[in-house]
Image 1 (cartoon, rainbow, N blue to C red):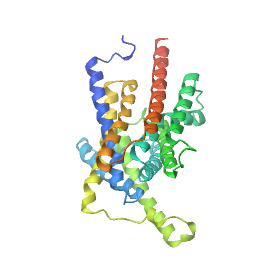
Image 2 (tube, rainbow, N blue to C red):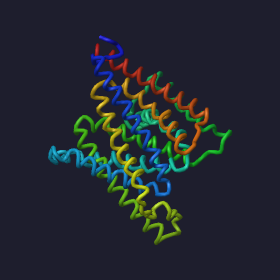
Image 3 (cartoon, rainbow, N blue to C red):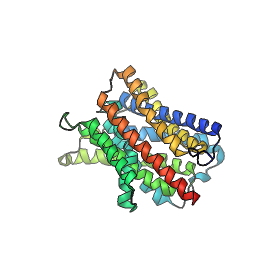
Length: 316
C-alpha cells in the first residue's frame, strides 16, 4: 500500500479528488473579490444576501429528494456551530472591505492553527512537539505579514484574524456534527440560520444605533443599502461561489484524503492575488507571500505529521 495513500485510493480517485479540490479553491477565491466589488454595502447585509441566495440554491437543488433532510436531533448544536459561522463570516467580510485582498486571504490561512489552540483550550487535547512547533512557526508567519513596528497595525487585520478564530470554532463543532448528521442537513441549517442571524442583527443593530445613539454603534454598519441592478452580478457571484466551494470540498474528500485536498486550498492566494491585480490593480507585497508560505508550510507539515500518526495507530 502506498504510504501517501493510506486508504488505498486509486490514482484516478486521487486525481478526481484533486480536481474537486482545485474547483473548491477557485470558488473560494471569488468570495473576497465579490465582497470588494460590493464594499459600499454593509458587511452584515452581505452576509444576509450571501446566505439567503445560497439557501434558495440549496433548496432548489435538493428539493427533488424531499424535505426529510431538515430532520435532526442536534438542533441546538447546529445553532451553536452556526453562530460561530455567522460571526466568522461577518468579521471576514468586514475585514475584506479595508485590507488588500491577498493579505486578508493569507491571514485567513491561520484557521488550522487556531483549531490547535481551541482544541487545547476546549477539548483538553495535548499537542505533540511537532504540532506545537508548527503552530508557533505558523503564527510567526502572521507576524511576517503584519510586520508590527515596521507598518501601522490595521484594525481590519484583527477582524480577519478574529474571523479565522471563529471558523476554527466551527471546525471544532464540525468534528462532532459530521458523525451524526448528513452533509445536506448541515448545509441547510448553515444557510438557514445565518440568514436568520443576519436579519436579526441588522434589525437590532439598526434599532439600537438609531434609538440610543449614546451606545456609539455606527449607524452605517446596520443601515440598509438597497442593491442596484449593477450589484446583482456581484451578489450572485458571492452567493454561488460561497455555496459551490464547500460542496466541491466535500466531493474532494469523498475521492481522496485530507492530506491531499487541504494543501490545494492554498491555491486561493495566487488565484485571488491574480484576480485582484486584474480587477483592482492591487499588487501583493513580498512579505505577504513570505508569511503565507510560512503559514502554509507549517500547516502542511502538521497535517502530514498527524496523518502519519493516525496511519501508524491504525496499523497497531
